[in-house]
Image (tube, rainbow over all chains, first blue to last red; front, side, top):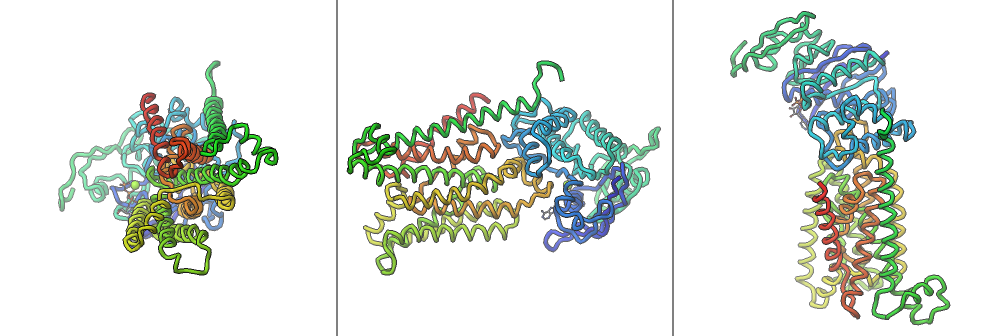
Length: 263
Length: 349
Ligand SMILES: Nc1ncnc2c1ncn2[C@@H]1O[C@H](COP(=O)(O)OP(=O)(O)OP(=O)(O)O)[C@@H](O)[C@H]1O
Ligand SMILES: [Mg+2]
């Protein structure tokens, strides 16, 4: 059982406030929260606050305990995050990256177990044939998958994904999100994912938070958040939203709105 | 998994074994190079004399014994110590600043050492208190460490901006060079000659104390570098990922820059600004060994030592009877090796 909560999150870069008193809904076990919002709305910043990388005035808890309660190692034992940028295209091998991460974090596994674990994760993400190819020879999408593999390696209860599918093709973006859901039903835990794809968000997220200029504009189930009015306000596009046979919203974007134009 | 298909564990193990072999090869090459370096020189000692003199010194005549123990050995060993220190400092600088052009030299450490040494050469006659031979390295060291401290302050102040650190280091290089030029403008012709000679880099000034100091510094720093090999490898995948794992990259950077500055300061203060090794040693090691810092850290130190030792050998062997300052030869030796490896890499790619 994992319950993840984040309230009153305020974050600044220098004097500029980019997140203003953001309250996320409480996430219960097995839930996926989608974080939507236009560029520069503060999604990545919020992710970094949640992971503990960026200091914030808010109150972030896993099962009611804050990072200060759990200690640095305890916190990162339960939470892992995948940053927006994929791993650097250096000559490092994906296996080396995974391996050194496990060792740098003092994961308690033997070499053979570790290798098998890495092999298993790579197999599920379609990276088996690239396991020993330098990162700079991998395509952008494959590198993004390596970044995801890195976050999955710790087998965290709280998984934070910053645009995990932005570079992936149609097949792999669904495989990745299926895998994320499957993992939840297998082992429990919660996921927070920043996404730009509204249909994916509607399909995979239990709750959605719509962020705009560092503030929450709407939050709740996909059908409540993904409305033409909300989307027009936040993304400045005219949309038609229909419900599919499962009652999930399908968003069809018609055209961008011009400055000052209302939907 | 089907039969006949090998597991990742085995395939990765094979790669690791090959790399261990390469490191071993480098170590053996280094011993061979050391032997060559000991043998070369104007006094015409044979290989037999060298072996005898090393293991049974009292069986050797006084003259060859003194040449071996007071001239050849310290020179050869300081080449190893300085080369290894610069190789180690280079790889750590490149990784922590994520910049293939970074080295202890682009941090300004060696230019500061040159400035300190020049100051010692020009001003020393005025300071009567300390012995003249000690003043030069001490001043070089003080300035090198001072530049290290400045860089550390910048690292702290820039708070994560690696480019700022690199740019500041290069600015420091220009400043130190300008001040050195200013000193030269004021100095006598004799002092200028001395400064130039120091700047080129030369191993023949070193004695056992210097060998001991540089080696001790290297030996003290190495365990810290080895303790960080996993995090440094992980950093090659990008700082964002390291940070997201909860690794305090800022603090790591402070530690690494601190030890790199000390290492580089010790390395250059006795022998002069032997350039290039801190830059190319790591690159050669990387081409041979990949990015895993478990191999790369020892490999880079070995490559650094090998290049300098080779340069030291050539400095004596190239023109019989003449010892060319080794600083002139480091690039002459290193560049062809480096280019050869690079083009080999291209053919395979
Ligand atoms: N390191 C930084 N220093 C200063 N300002 C920053 C920094 N990182 C982000 N910002 C600012 O914070 C705001 C939010 O940025 P953030 O990266 O969180 O947006 P985002 O929602 O993730 O955008 P995108 O969809 O483009 O990834 C932006 O205005 C951005 O300019
Ligand atoms: Mg972002």
